[in-house]
Image (cartoon, rainbow, N blue to C red; front, top):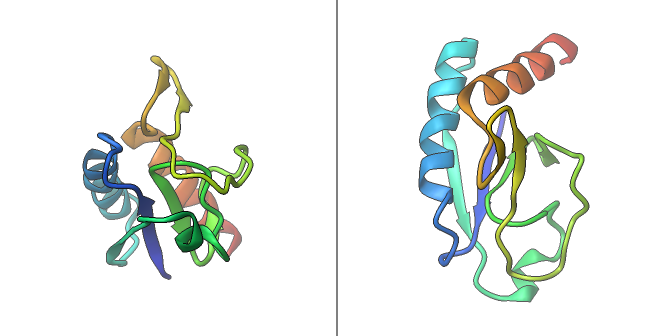
Length: 104
């Protein structure tokens, strides 16, 4: 399983999102390394499912596909139980990862 966090440098959420993702992978019992890909120019977005920073990608697909891919360097917000935030909470990540594991 390939797990990536697509991000821009100016987004304040990508580091914490990556840390939560690593915790969620461990909690879900998935042995995978999180890779981080810095997108520095609109051309870097081509061929990705980038929907704002951070976008969490598993095997080439957005883990939270409700957002449309964008072609601009921008931050992303996620609906969470606490309202809109710059990243999903750990429980949301665990649920999404377990859902992938169950279907894969």
